[in-house]
Image (cartoon, rainbow, N blue to C red; front, side, top):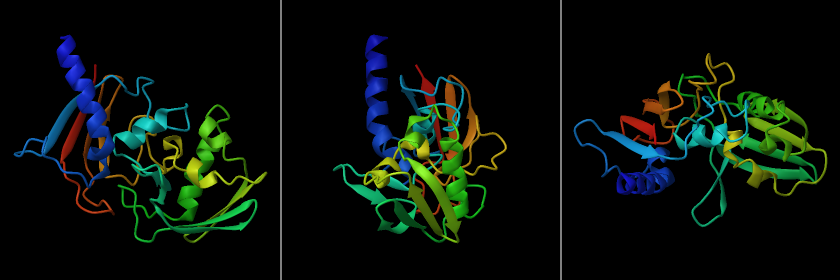
Length: 220
């Protein structure tokens, strides 16, 4: 049993790097159904995938391929735009971030600056979620695809902080943010509870073909 758990945890660590991006190889999947089942000891045992509800929920929402952040950290620790086309600083406390065109949530709703703003604001409203408070946001303004963030003080690390999984961009109008949040990621939640999360391929994923049809994450 100990050996089985060790193997499962190691597999989990390897897969979490790439399998949920929608762009990795799927040689470990079953060829017939393109389905993957794996075990992990790191799981959303809070019973919720809503990052605005408690710290660290967003880590699992992003890890399971449900949502994505505005920026991401590459393997070499460099920062790269993810849902963002371009960005710039207007002054010491003002950032202009342009969302890419053509991105939709898995329910078909278009991702624009207003949708990104609303998602971030939900996290900011919970003072217990440290990722939101670290941004030091004074105000946000949405205009088409352009999101303008003004901070209370100079914050040169803001772009880095927007990589935090707790700032994953979700559709705030999702019917069930706890167990079926809607994001822009390669997978859609089929079911979720404190022991298991099942996600299905997002047929309308904006960033290329998704390699797996279904993934089941088992908590061990």
